[in-house]
Image (cartoon, rainbow, N blue to C red; front, side, top):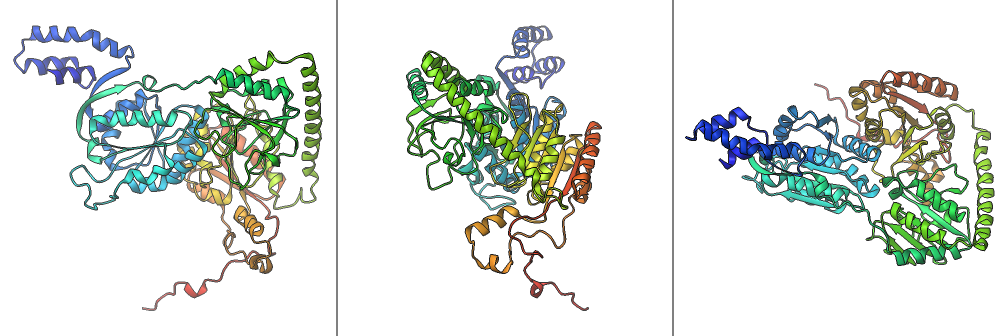
Length: 634
């Protein structure tokens, strides 16, 4: 009877089926109806949204049920037969939508883009270790960019033949991703599949965010089991932490007494929606604001207190101010890749972020503020307002005037690039392509940027209702096209433009097929200079007088002979595209792209871009004629 009750409450057995099965055991019909009536309150409680539901079914169906309870709408996956029971479960669960992706890497990037733009959970599925291997690069990006993306792939070895070096089997599969995942686990029993998934979502969505990985033996998907399905909000710690009030007072006093404080913002501001608080804090102190390497634009770039992004691995690289005596970090990961500390030893450092593990890891911290940055800034603003005297306000006003004078001059100087002697050349310089796209973009466009060293200028990004930036810095190429498809899935009513380099584009074009199939009208602009410009420039920087510079024989970066036609590649995936060589052609192509997106169709523009810097007049490729295949005479 317990099994019949569980099946009825889990909706895998109808009312009629319950009565029929129970009477078959010898129970009278009236007694069976009495038992059924006693279950009505429990069934109604489940329908009303109780956090715990008993479910009975296959492991694949358990997976589907827990994903729904975890708030998942989209499952991004590359098809595999070992997940057949999960696909079966989706037929009767239309609230869970499966997005088939032709390749695991761009599929994972699409899932990451959806999460970034929607701030909602998603899962990406791969076929065993072979599919996982294709997705690991995007898991690395998720780790570096702190994206809460859950990965799943089955183990192709079953529980009854594990360890025999079978088809697609590898020992300790989950350990492959251990260095880059917050949580990895192999579920031991089918009834633990939902719990394993809950742990994975809990780990990914507990700040600081990051990827997690869940796995189980493939035969568990077919095994029938009885288990609990629990709503995610009843296992999620919902970490909205307020800072220590004593430390808040110390931080406020340091900022009040500072001659030239500097604020550095980061992605925790985006994730908790605290851009307004960041602006208020900066304005309250007349304080210049910058941003070190991050995924999103976390402060309005046109604000008179924003002094620009830090171009290198140290806040000392910011042009203004040069004499910051107090630096406060608000939610920036502070990615540190230089020999010197990112914050100069001469400045006192206040670090506010939820990532307590990394606070003080490299930089001595005068005041650590472990907090949700929205709460942290609110408390800090309140403390500061109680300390601002007329004399302090006079100093703040003078400082704000200096910062505004600098930003006005800087913007005038930055705009002078349009006077470049190469401005009207064909093929175009990259800055001209960017400028034209920026003039074209909607005021609230989402710009996905994977164009390498290309400067995304002129967009005036703002998290307060303006254009938004979705940049990659995980450094595994091939994320741009997939990410933009995911962003469009999350933001159907906003224009989405993907800026991508030709080298990056060839790592992940398959997401174009998803754009065409699901009518995700993204505009993709490829900067095509037929070269890897980043590696080219770094070689010159690292070996300035080397043989490659002397001879012009750069062996590692030329992508011509033959030139790749990205528009042809796009058409193979069902996306219209064209090649442009001049600004006039680009403007016309952007107009056609807008009309296509209005009709729900994506569009690709292959923008021919000039190679700049130290290049030989004729790019060189190594001669490998000695190893060419010869046709054998028969």
